[in-house]
Amino acid sequence: MERLSPLDLGMLWPDDFGWPEDIGVLAVLDGNRTAGHFSLDLAREVVAKRLPLVRRMRQVLRVPRTGLGPPYWTDASTVDVDDHVRAAEVPAPGDDEQLLGVVERIRRRRLDRSRPLWEMWVLTGLAGGRTGLFVRLHHTIADGVAAVALLGAFFDPGPEVRALAPPWPAAEPEPTAPQLLADNARRRWREVRRGVSALTRLPESVAAMRQAWPAFREFAAEGRAPRTSLNTPIGPGRRFALVRGDLPLAKRIAAAHGAKVNDVLMAAMSGGLRELLRARGEPVDALVLRAYVPVSLHQEPPDRLRGNFDGMMLVPLPLGVADPVRRLEMIAAETAKRKKHKRSAGGGALFRVSALQRAVMRRMDRQRWANVYAADVPGPPEPLHFAGARVLELFPIVPLIGNITLGLGALSYAGQLAITVVGDADACPDVEVFARGAEHALDTLAGSRGRDFGPVGR
View (tube, rainbow, N blue to C red):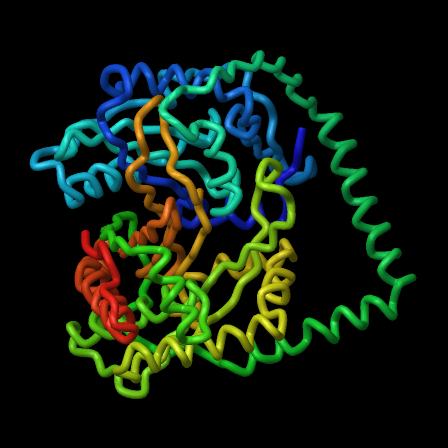
């Protein structure tokens, strides 16, 4: 039995408010394998053989009654692979629009908490003989970085399917109520001991608080994010758009301007937001929006990553600046300053307090500290294969929460920079306008170095 950490618990509560915290990866595969065609049966066979390697995907989340402690993971007695790995047909003509429509229909189905919180969908009917593969899992299982590492168990470096068939581990017995009660008592005692221990190390505690104080002070001093149409309570539906970029070129653009790739993404997001709000007739002159950006604090090796370990950073997006190059330089300077102040660690500490987490969640549909959400996750640097089929593209699928109606997820893969834009279906159906604006910003940044940004488009 393993209890949810405070950060993992923070990924569970949004479900109670109607904001499912599912994350996912959408892969586009070459429909042809080295021998024969890719199929649902092959996908199920690979998953069944690899599941013993990924314990969290063989576990069920239990929420005990009051007094027995936080939710916990326990081994499922069985995992019906045929039920978790399914297929759906993408309507003609099988382009991105139809593919993303199928992904949205699948996404709106809530994951069943009575079984392991993941599923895989083989999506047939894509143009050019391609096949889609949509894997979704609940955010309590992993954050973006850990999810990429976790799902890596199902992929191979080449077309040959590795003969990995470890024995299926025996399921641990379900804990009884007395065992949960005793475990909760021990957990609370450990918390008391940690508190007492902190008092005995008061100088170190004071030093840590002084180090974190600039981050909290800056957070409070920024005040509220500006009011725009981007912040309104979200509904259940989503709209998606894709932007395709070239990672080596993005790195060269970043290096030329003293920036990071994430800064380039933020500059592209600024361009998309500028075009989106202008198309809506909203003023952008002198407008500075704020993006909530999760920052991974993982330090484990990739094969041991699990759960959620994110901090946070608020990044100003200067929409009032028309020049994408100037926007990039301003964003790069601002993010460098915030990272120097250890802003991400301070924000992470803020959300480790469970009582505060719950209070924040209750008010997320009225929050005023961020306008948009953006996540950048490093993916596999080399090409992958699934069940013998080459993975042509990998796109992240990120959730929305509260009153943040527009988000962006970016994932690097084998020299590509894949960006998925997600908007609330009612409040932000015009995600394509944002995507075109982001593409234009990327093209302009590339042109500033005398190059073309590469395969940008949907």
